[in-house]
Amino acid sequence: MHGRVALVTGASNGIGAGVARALAGRGATVVLADVDEEAGTVLAAEVGGSFLPCDVRQLAQVEAVVAHALDQHGRIDLAHLNAGVSTGCGLGDDFDEAHYRRAMGVNLDGVVFGVHAVLPAMLAQGSGSIVATASMAGIVAPAFDPVYVANKHAVVGLVRSLGAIYGPQGIRVNALCPSFADTAILGELRPVLAEQHFPILEVSDVVEAFLGIVDSDSSGECWFVVPGRPSEPFRFRNAPGPRSS
Image 1 (cartoon, rainbow, N blue to C red):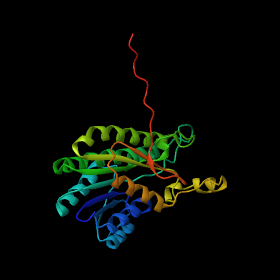
Image 2: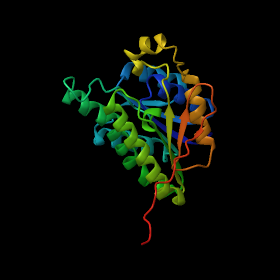
Image 3: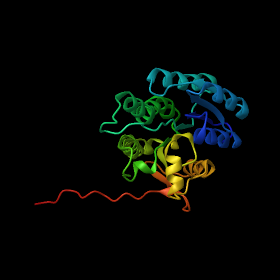
Image 4: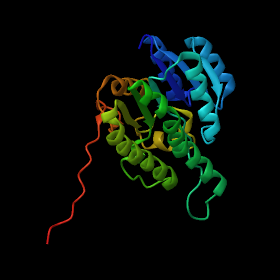
């Protein structure tokens, strides 16, 4: 990664922070973006990168971060679109429109806006890698938090389509799909998982899987990360096509 420039959203804590440290350790110049300015500024100093406050729900702010990276470094080789939040509402009596809009804005719009902002530079340089943090909830359909499941399924579908479109043009697009990882997003689920003895991923395991995606040549793949298994692309079954009469 020496001489390469990486952009990480949701970079101040959790998976994003782990990825930023790992990329800097490989010699990359890292541009960090997050709403947590205090932690992000400290981490940027630690990894020798730069930090910009960014709410990924706002296209203008995402574009400003990308413009900064290009102005300072002239290129973006890798974009990890990682910012994410839990939903905090259901679709029954517990539905809350503000929580819904926030979750869809961060988890889905943040990926869409990030891809839109970095694509022109990557296409101009003829290469690039985009990794969006999705979730195992985007591959399976767990019986909880249906709004979170919906936006993560949307990210998975988006990545599969983008990979097919831009892979031939030198831009690889993949999804990182961890199960429950030891980050703040677990929130109230943590004691429930502990009671059920459900294994929780270490952040380092997710970062290792991320680096596996970076080192691969795949595009349009959704890499699962679950305890006890090596990370690899999930094999989707082909949908049935039309029959000739």
